[in-house]
Image (cartoon, rainbow, N blue to C red):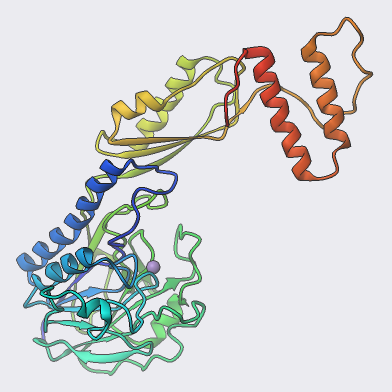
Length: 407
Ligand SMILES: [Mn+2]
């Protein structure tokens, strides 16, 4: 038998709320991003029609919920159906987990309610069981796909590969599921969803595993440098945590030939990148110096005018300096948000021993500083101390700047 060509896409999260979170997209831009998100799936579908892979593997989180709205569901079914005659396999993920009421159950009220809405085509196989099942690829009987669904109410720390049937010795056995490889580089906080290790995967004996969950694409490699499987990554950057995402994957497998990383091809599909930039303002004491530092950071990220930027300001902002990068950034980028976590530089050592109370010759500011430090040192809880610090900063803003900068 000859090679097997695979196209893989997961973690599109259709229906995700694009307007929320620190990125704070206004509704009009969120709507535009929503149509660009759909375009990622449309582009993948035309790639499939053009390149005619043997199998299309979609290991989870195509939708942000197992019960998407009818418009998203109909759109996705139409896109997946347009990939025919390619055989498409879907394994639901932790966001669009399988349940009897999910869109992956053709008997569900949601699926049935859509009147003349499209049905999943006969070239689409959806894994709905929590245990692994094996099916043969329709046009390539030597290729088989073994997959399982994430179930919405199942515990997330189950060892997903513990009860898997070993791959048969002949043919090309593919595996697909939604799970979290332990020790995946730069993995987010969401590590506990169906964890597995590379050595557990190696022991199963499958030729290749298509895995979903992590939004940054990457290969799963054994000690021997053989590729065991891969994450395609998320094709679309939906939130601030989606740094460096925007891909689907295709690859060619040859029987009895170890897969190498060179055979994996990630295709970038989202035209926009989300940049999270952290800038420490400490020591930058005029707005030109601050703007210069910001320019350096933007240049190092290679942000373009199509991109989304979230700037987090940290450190101590020099007294009397109003740094307002919002307008400049808004002109340069598709969207910009500023998360101001700076503290004014009032150089107060709250913990240092308190000197004598200031005399009659002291300024109001000196008296205020002394009294607030006294209150701080008498405070009994961390919460109280944090509140006193805030009050000091606001009080000093009022006394020295004549205005209060809300934080
Ligand atoms: Mn997931």
